[in-house]
Image 1: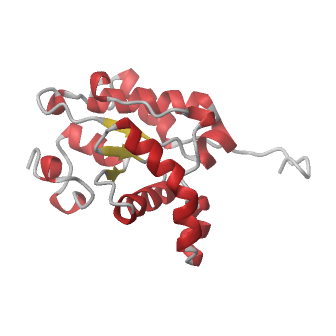
Image 2: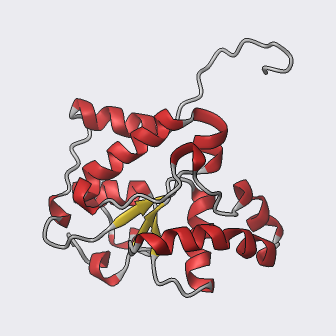
Image 3: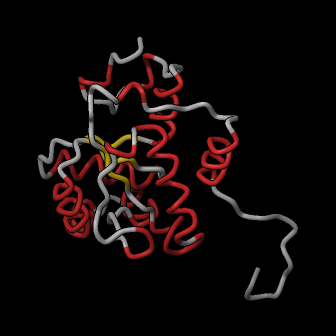
Length: 179
């Protein structure tokens, strides 16, 4: 649209912006009480398409706000570098996963794997489905032992509405929490 100077009749937004807004407004009543005693640590992946290539650091800040509201600020571990400077996970916006270049995808993703491992967090929150698949595979392939989990899964967990069938990617310490 920019190339052909077409004025859009819509605005591109991320659901993460709305999660943060709804939490701030009290419309999405999440809390981190479930993790006060467990003290499970979480890190977060800043997706390339969402943060670096599209909406920038403001969406990364909304992501961190929502994550901290759900897991507890004291249980959030930052990766370095992060936000717009974060390393790509190697998922290629779904291209590498869809086309089967597993060796290349895993080689590119090794930097992200090492970055996650350095945090010591047993969970990596991935708001992007492509990142989720890639980061999950990297943990399995390189035997990292961490779990990849969608942000919405933790939001639902914090609200007490996460269904039994939606707990596939949770580790044993969270799989039955709140059931």
